[in-house]
Image (cartoon, rainbow, N blue to C red; front, side, top):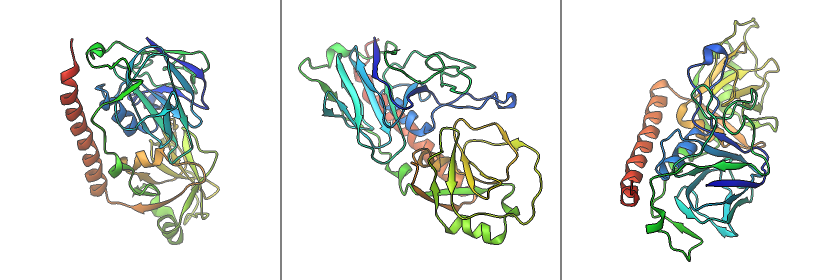
Length: 331
């Protein structure tokens, strides 16, 4: 009952929605960079939102299914294929044993996610199965997936024998997620002003909101490094290191910006000029090197409203999927 990695990807890891409650020890939450996508693919196959998924970066790996499975794929807009047959994304699909999943093309988006009904067996550390690459903990032996790895998936409540057609290589189930509102206008990110926002010169504050910034190739799971106009502060002063989180926008000594991602440090001494709102973190997670992004300031009330709407849609999706799946559960 496993998936075998027959060709490793550039960076495929097991992730969940994060390891919270230990930042005061200097341990970051980690987890999926695009937590929204990870949650959606889980919900589509009836899993809890925080179940372990495979996070992939392009070029991703090739996977051999050694048993029938109900899966969902989402995140980046790469085209998945099962034995050369295209698979839909953001929709549950039954795949058959001895078939190979691979991805082609480098469409928009940076990270893809694969969920399997019932979940994936993974090593837990401090209550999370997310792979902590820097510390070698959690996920699959604390490292990225490699050739020959066997990813064991758990038994689920789905009765495959009653609704799988033997002559079908794959079967698409009749429900899917509408994620368009979340990823709409991918190059525009809203942010709330950070504690050190007012220390920027007026010219620099205007530049943040009016000019484009390019994502640099050095960006990774720790943070997005940006190239844009050199920003300046009214006066220079040393700051005491203080708490930061995913989405915090920091001003580097070079005058360039960095936005912290899932594997961010827990504290930092660079000025925090802003924070990407929670509802736009999925868009941030899918930015690719070379892509330009623009920022717009948002009031806290707007950030709360958009976050609430996103969470509400997730719970609606969960209720709808559960209603569909009830007819297939046998235990």
